[in-house]
Amino acid sequence: DGTPLVYRAFGPADAPPLVLLHGWAQSSKCWGDGVLDALARNFRVIAVDLRGHGYSGAPESGYDDSKAWAGDVDAVFAAEGVSQHNPAVLLGWSYGGLVICDYLAAHGSAAVAAVILVGAVTSLGRGEKGGRVGPSMRAAIPGAMSEVPREAVSALGSFGNALTGAAEDAGVASQALFGASLSTPPRVRAALFARTVSNDDLLSDLDVPVLVLHGADDSVVDVSAAHHVASLVPRVTTSIWDGVGHGPFVEDPDRFVDEVARFAQSG
Image 1: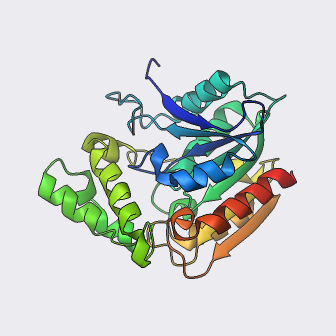
Image 2: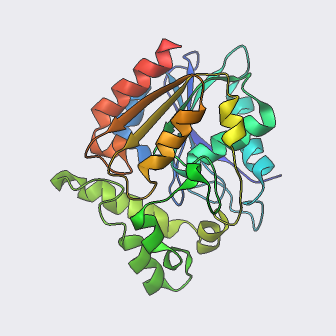
Image 3: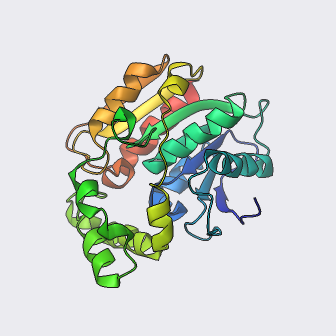
């Protein structure tokens, strides 16, 4: 629709493509340089700034349009030569899981080798089990969407260690993620939740392998959302990390890289 999209690519151009889609109010920097560099040893890593986030354009509308999100992923695929002859592994964190479903609903799985859902939502709306949020997310709404600085700072700050865990060395990552949330326009933060969509039928018919990776202590997206997806997908591998919150790649980057790489290479 004319929205400029920015992505960063790492690793050999002829390596298997691994496309990373970040979560709500984040950017392609959320993964951390260490994770990106480690994954790039075996993959062509394509880390996308979703529309309205990072350096990508932030149009006034379109955030409630599943086809717009699908078109964004398809445009990145086209730019990087992803096709049924060179399929990508699609990895989505949090809201990125919903964007993966948007793409699959519009374009199918011909250009997708596998899907990895990390602390992900796959549906939105009241009663949607694939979109159940945890107490940290519920506490942040509606303040996190406010244009009043003190309200937004307070609400987003209430996430505390939910994205990074409580490790002593998580402070720098926590500040970076907090900064990305604040730099995402408030109207975009609000618009991402202004739609209702169910993808249960889509997931039940999905014909590619899926890894569901989720922290058992996730207070942003409830772990029940992961169990719900796992109950639907025919070819599923489930990895629930005890004692881990919403950002497994922040809390244990080495384990994250290992599990993602092994799964992506197994298909």
